Image 1 (cartoon, rainbow, N blue to C red):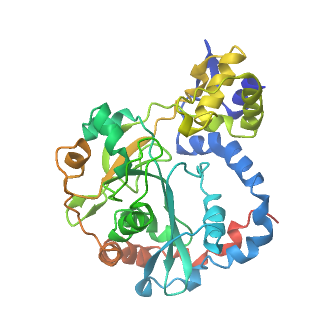
Image 2: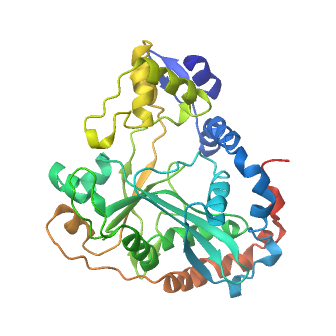
Image 3: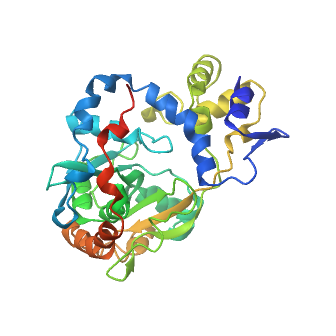
Length: 364
């Protein structure tokens, strides 16, 4: 079943490894993700009764007035209408969006002019080991273990139509570095005690990382503010993951692993289950005689670092104890974006005016 599913997605097999189709471009990468995206939509049937109401929170092109636009960052609260909107909008990304894990904080970007959705920001705990990021910071295992709590990873970062047609993906990317996001994180997590070390956290956020969805990113590359490069390119992932098992296949794999495989959680405080989806797949593959190398799908994603202070790396390495914040207000970031990108685009290309929220309807 596993091999048949992978072949149906377009992967080629050779000596217990899978390989991407020849000449794969960005559209080809999107096609590889389509089964997982469709399955994610199928799992969100609880949103069906809310779809019309959620679509009403999107702007039609005629409702967008670039010269009067005023973005506001709103933290998403659990069990709220905003959370439903976040979940619904994320279903429209061209790759399956993770829900994040560990610490998690989510934001809607709303246009105060019409109270419609501009875009989404979702942050969660970063992976413990990421070679390119770790080399860029320059920390050792001990300082990483101690200071990784001062970093988060953006699992979703982007604009929705019609704002995306006005290059607002760049705006949302810029806003992830704003004081407002950093302050909301501190408000939510300052004073929390770690599960294992029982140490209190001061809530300082020094670094945000993210990875491009489709190879190199036209949004993040060369994105500057005040002469500073906001997104620093630090390398590429190695092409490992489990998205290609997320098209309905993961459910069967999970059931098999729970029944026949031994979890490798090592700390009682972490619980007794599997540590991650990747471990579930890895254990299943080994048990049924397939190679763990099938987790290597080969799609390398570019890794970006967003330092929130001029000395973020020194702080994360433990060389310095005080952060020198960049102090970027969302209003200043927006004004720069507006003049640099949005207004010229709104004059040059007015196709955004033709978009209607019904184009986003998932269930008929």
